Length: 167
Image 1 (cartoon, helix red, strand yellow):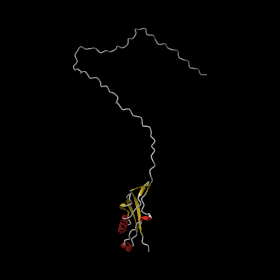
Image 2 (image 1 turned 135 degrees about the vertical axis):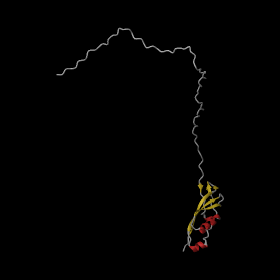
Image 3 (image 1 turned 180 degrees about the horizontal axis):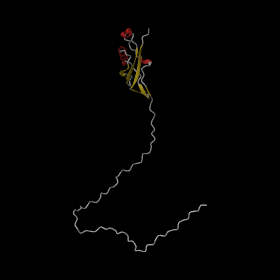
Image 4 (image 1 turned 90 degrees about the horizontal axis):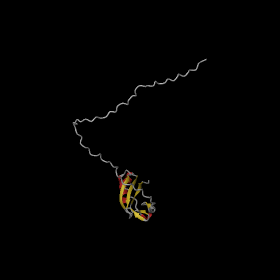
């Protein structure tokens, strides 16, 4: 059989009957009567730092329901109304002889009165004679002006013109 270990007997610390131990001495600065080699001038008091002053933030304004009148419908300018009787461009005779065909796209600025104020070549037919014939014809055309509601306004319109030889 195995024996259980026995606990060790408690040992008491020896009691010291000698003189009590004094606490360590406190060091104090000794004042010397000897004069100092330098003098420190009196310092101004430290400045008082105040927090920055900020204006109070006003609360956001209450939302206002904005009810706007519906905008009038804008209708684009037109060049194809039958009553305008715009003449077709004259096919240049030299272009006919040479068999030149093509499509010209013009950008036309139309006044509120329905007159072409500016005509520019947007896409060429690749034949200057055809392009010039289209520009010259459209400069004299009348247009139905664009309208905002019932009021005529200036606007632009794209005018496509095709030059085709029918054999």
